[in-house]
Image (cartoon, rainbow, N blue to C red; front, side, top):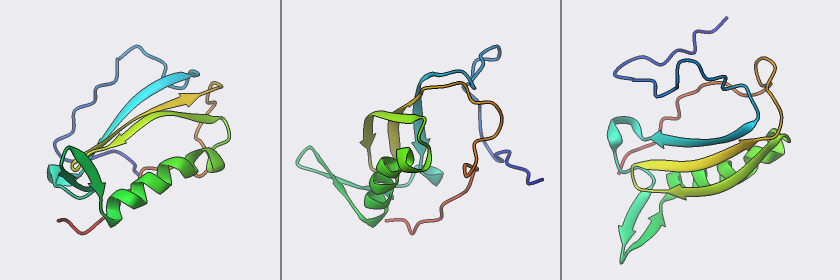
Length: 109
């Protein structure tokens, strides 16, 4: 079995007694490694996505195709991080098929 634990300076923000397999809305934040500007830049108060940002944008909207019980809500891409709200319509009983922790290595700006 693969070891999917994160390594390095990582601090879990999960509530210790919460059941994260329950149906509900989950606010997520994904930060770029070393908080580098890899998703694009701000120009005249507008986010301009680069190739990496477009990849993340497209992947976000493909989630419901891969995971039919998942609904998308608000989503935004910033130069160094991504925010989004995922809504799970049913309780998750065990691992989600096709979902695993991976690292995506993208060239930095």
